[in-house]
Image (tube, rainbow, N blue to C red; front, side):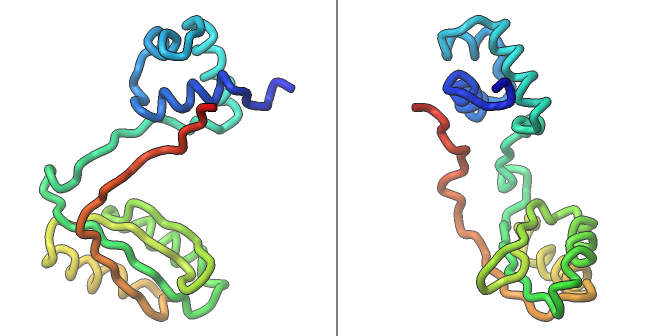
Length: 153
């Protein structure tokens, strides 16, 4: 079936996950296939929605954003999820939002320049969102790993 991914597709994904800007010729060389095959397979995976784009991996601390904070949010009511997510999405410093099971209803990742910026963001943006009952904050001391799954064999 042409919509299924095979070992070649997984190899291409693994190579591109290391460097999404790698050209097809280099991907082909590493995968042991032709550049045309890489192009065709990559287009197929984009059409299937497997590849949703390419992103940069930034070191925020080198850009002056010294704090990464995770927030565990409790909602007043489960039905308020969509409106809370919409409001969180409007906060530029919010970079990831996860609907979660377990202790929290929503788990959020944000970046802030420093503790003053974080306090301002927390008090003037996040706490004012209607539907949030309570928040627990977790400050990241260091990110030691950030990777994609290796789809290789």
